[in-house]
Amino acid sequence: MKKRLLMVSNRLPVKIAADGTATRTAGGLASALEGAELENEQIWVGWPGGAEEEFDDPEAISKQLNEQNTWPVFLSQAELDGFYEGYANSTLWPILHYMVERAKFSQEWWDSYKAVNQKFADVILSIAQDGDMIWIHDYHLFLLPELLRGTNMNLRVGFFLHTPFCSSEVFRVLPHRAELLRGVLGADIIGFHTSSYLRHFRSTLLRVLGKESEMDSIWYGGREVRLLAAPIGHNHLGFQKCMEREDFGEIVAEHREELNGKRLVLSVERLDYTKGVPQKLTAIHRFLKDNPEWCDEVIFVLISVPSRQGVEEYDQLTEEVQRAVGAINGEFGSVGHSPVQFLHRGFPPADLAALYALSELCLVTPLRDGMNLVAKEFLDCQREEIAGRPGVLILSELAGAAEELSNAIQVNPHNTEEVADAIARALEMPDEERKFRIEAMQRRLRLRHSGPWAQSFVEDLEKVPAREQRVAVF
Ligand code: G6P
Image (cartoon, rainbow, N blue to C red):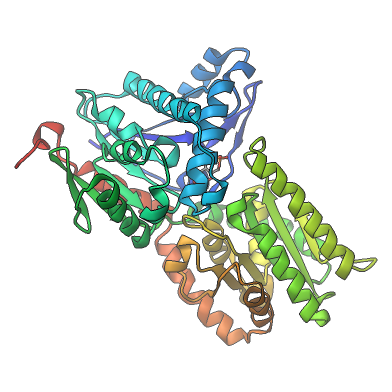
């Protein structure tokens, strides 16, 4: 019989409002894992959103979620301030994305991070059974693998990082770098999206802990920890289902009408400073200035899903983006046309699929990104018969996806002229070249979607020997 799998991430794939209603959550991790159809019995453990104090009856919500094999870890307002907004998103997030000057450090946040990791461990240990596999996701829970190892249970623990792992020179800036590394080394398997992130992790182990490792493993604490690079895929099956819906044609027709005959250049991202939205707007400004003949022909639609509102940096960013959009439309718009549409909200997957299918060009230009699944979703949903011609992807070379998607037009997102020129080049690209580029990428990513990605990680975890066979052999 297949082993039971406990999936653990800070955020559950659903967000529960104070009155108990559930909505999908934004972000690549949630969307990809939704499409990972695993055969193992599965339990999800994670934060349901909001502060514990907001729920009238957390126990009732727990019960309701438990029926769907989901175990909530409620976080108090103080924990949200210290662990989530503080250490996870104002210390670790900027460091892992090379934005050292944005990182803030606080002993209180660190204490809260440790306490919340312990809280996750307590919830997991209250439901775990001998032989279970525990798959922990992302930077919020670096300490959790070691906390689970400290028990006597026979658990197989995997950890996957969905952000970049930065160079050791950057990681060593963290005051608690050694504790974080020891925490994650409690896992039996540690996975990253690219071989570069894995390389950075290995050199950090050497610089910070003085530990040598092999390409694919390290001996630590008398046992072997496997290291692997496995790029996550997108939710191919989910998007395919959307496109097979009976009303999909109508959804496409509605959006086509909104475009009013203009050629669609699409961007989709959480509104996060790592995504480079202001830099992208500077490049769009440059493109419109250099190519006035395109002003009335194209429409740039920026879908910016609100994110981490409450963290100062994110609130400032929203204002900055709104100002830049207004300035571009003021300069290049006409009575009947604003070249940039800023849509500050999430869209249901079927609408996203329709917009991806209708786009002539997708602009994915993060300053740093662990993977970026929008690039893969766009390519997968492209249909020549809907857009009229094959679409083109402009992709930041600083996104993890760039290692795989070599047929995209790759750009340095900090180079305004390069991005502006790439937009012009893409719009003018002959159909044969577009077709050649997109088909090569589509073939690959439709095979390597989130299903096989998750399946293969779980198979590796299943092969981890039982605890008693894992003790030191030297
Ligand atoms: C990124 C992270 C995820 C996170 C998501 C949304 O994709 O890798 O772990 O869930 O952003 O961010 P949030 O703070 O809203 O959970």
